[in-house]
Length: 124
Image (cartoon, rainbow, N blue to C red; front, side, top):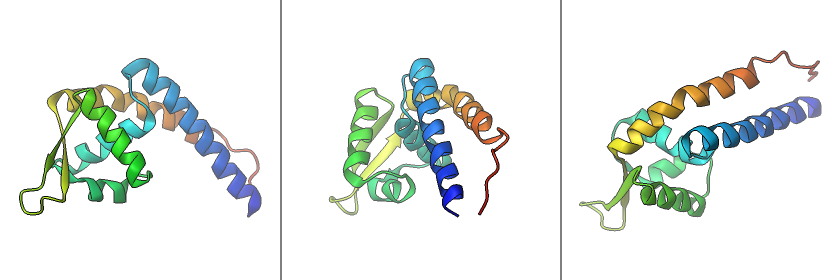
């Protein structure tokens, strides 16, 4: 089982490094920025920051920093919730939707390349 865990960790590290390089070089996005855009596009609606936090693998403070970077790049916008002023909504902009669409094939190709490699003997 420990060897399987090490295999998973190695694949994750390899995927994150490749995504960082490819998404950054080709689209000016990091893996976390892409993931946030991807989750918003997937839901096709504005999301509460807390809903987004439940779906991405980031702490609330890390997510806030990612959203701030995306907002600065005009890829998302933030706004207060009408019903609950403490809530914050995140909406994707047209530019964010376009950047996501451009980056999606790169993201999928990187993951496909890493996760379709023939694994070394993994024992459980």
